[in-house]
Length: 330
Image (cartoon, rainbow, N blue to C red; front, side, top):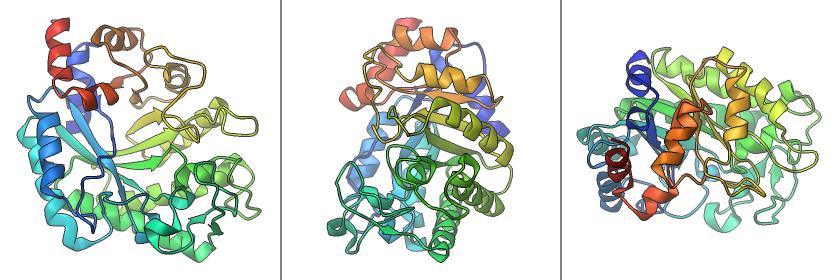
């Protein structure tokens, strides 16, 4: 853990040592979710030059019913570990640290993708697709906790520097956290602490298999921007619970509205969320959201809106963005 954090936080608050590439789905995997040549080529291109302190690899499904879309990377089978190891090696060879994001789509997938009715905390239609999911039983929740644990073990075996649990953008863990989608009346619903129970069980299970010295990140959908949904105050409570549970870094993003912040076009539009969360935790906080100019990224760092800056869409469009940004700031 110290090695990754030392790498990310070494030196002064400048973009040069605080720039990360956040997870962005490529839909380039093999049909079974295995790492393809196209995936390796993509991360080779994006990591070339070692300008990112950290690259978080796109969300990868932990179990078949949690697959979000076709050609999504998979961490649900031991036979895929060798391919994952090749991916970690590509990123390492270019001088960046590598973290794998693991995820369960819940009701954010479709029957066409997974071959069965999607699952969720409650039978509430998902706003993305309108389909009504099947409510998870307590045994099925336990099975998914096990799936996250097994996936994290594979990530560590593959040689990654850490693992990130995905709880944002309308996927399953986000669905448990949000009152908009979690209508349960058992110990997994109702109060905020009940709605976080599933998260905390997954964190404990993952830590039990990867150990205390393997960095554990969590991407948190911090605000639904809708009446009755997740508020920033909810996420401040959640952030404190996650820090106590052993999360190493919090990666802040949106919830059911995905990657956007309504009514805001400024670069780093999630900065009000990261700033609020930084006030209640001592662990590093990642800010992403519409950042396209290196000067804007560095300004957000210097203003202490976040500890690390993620630039995704700009890098997706221009693989040389990070190199040019650092040269510009020098």
